[in-house]
Length: 229
Image (cartoon, rainbow, N blue to C red):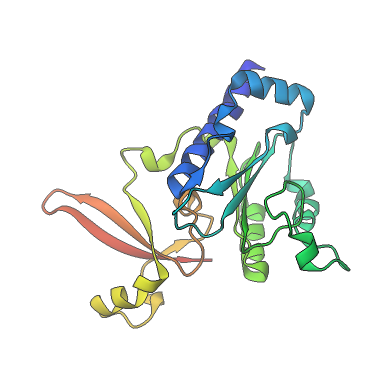
């Protein structure tokens, strides 16, 4: 039990670290320690008591003002269709009525207001990647999955991982002109949600990602990659 609580705690702390780096206020959610997690698991073994929502810090440029975090301690793979359906507006209810509280856990999601991140207790296989792609293609909903066992530290803080940065949309055209590139497809590709770093930084298809790598001769060199499905 102690090892399980530690796994949940560490993966949750890693996610909070990632969200803070993206520009969200994680102050309230950070108050949960191992004891609170143990109490939450006792109250609901499926992890529902550990779920939370964070909002963007003032003045931060983020893709959605809210991020809703779900924690699945039981297997989600077989129940994924039902979970995805719960995020959609029910038939017969207007989108305005269903998204008045876009950051409320368990309510339908307005993709313009809220992103979804899921911590899962099982490997993130192709069915999860496909679900993320489908939700983006059909609803422009940002949906990401992270496997707790391999999410015990922020990979962007590892010394072997070079800095990754999403280039703002308004800078795409000037960048392409400076590099004599006429189409985005000419950039090297990086796969949406299959590459763990794209999920950590919150990239979506169409984003250009700047990667700054160390160089023994020049000190550093920069490469740009296109995020693609």
